[in-house]
Length: 543
Image (cartoon, rainbow, N blue to C red):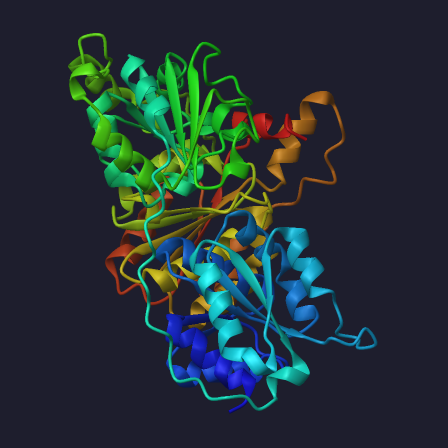
């Protein structure tokens, strides 16, 4: 059996069920082997789109994604999406054919490329093909983005047939880390707040039980939005997207426990959100994450669920913050119900005859769309509006492509999310700049007949630069654009396309939602640019 066929069978045997990519000579045989084994191949228009699709798929369903690309330019075309995945610790295997001779026009230094973007690198050997492919998949399943080098001359070599995966041996439970200092901090606190990040996405149940036991309020980083959806003590996203009430309450905390969050500048508003008097604890499975963004008072090295369970097992509820000194009161619960969502915060509607206020647009969409939804947000000036005003049902319902802060990844990521969760409506929220960068993948969406809603927050500019440089009097000709009929571009790809300038213009969305939804709908929302986004002002402070 040839190595390429063995690799395909191994990956499918370990659980790979979807493969995203663009096929060329270098990845033709391994891709066909995956399909022959039973995997579904999703052909993208461009390798960059394929990488983002695989990323969005894995984030939404939690399974390992497989990306298959051509050697050389196929890999480099996928590099931005691959970098976003690696920085997000997305479980992904990248099938990267390798021209190993430096004389080849396809040659690139794959190990160096992987290292440069924070991905792991594995290489398949002819004599150990099955073991090497298995090792790559297992590394991805542990939360790594893995570039799997497939040397061209090795792929066609003969090797031993693969007889199936070895029996899964249950991992031996590791030693529970010392939690007594954290336990003491929880017992001493009267106003504790938990901030859960990407590393806590699977830990809703133990964290909510622990929060109930010690009287903590619950918040998340943007990457974990939806984790505590429906909980009465949920403050939603901390940092730049925090509601005024959330900022007030986090700012009054005497203990902040970061669960799987590095408390970066976005989550802490450059450190200004957490009061200097608060004790700050960081719990993470990776000790290298401790203190990388701000000093912390206490660290606990361990997987979030295991640490939370260990603390629960030792916690004496009679000595925690659930006493009268705690802040989980009926009055506070009512304040969170009344003011804990952005749509309950008053604002002055800045819509005019030609444009709609992006907040008004987002509120109207939140009312129109079914609750069972997946919201995927691209990067750009607009990104706070869908992130803050659109609710999601759970942590799998929100995909935030901000680890690399690249504009243009959201649309393709949404296609991957739609493949992962066809039972939910997938909403891609993009800016006009990001849409134009990635519109080619609408051809993929139409071909797959995906029930995808694309909302373009169209301010005819790279709005982040306008809001950042405009107040200083700089010329903005390089970052502003003439009005463009983006709905017509969408119709050219075979989507339904509509232009929105008022809330009344959204009525066709209601009709599309009520129909079979067998093709994508693209909304070109002409949004007002008068309302500046403070989250971008915060972002530019870090550059």
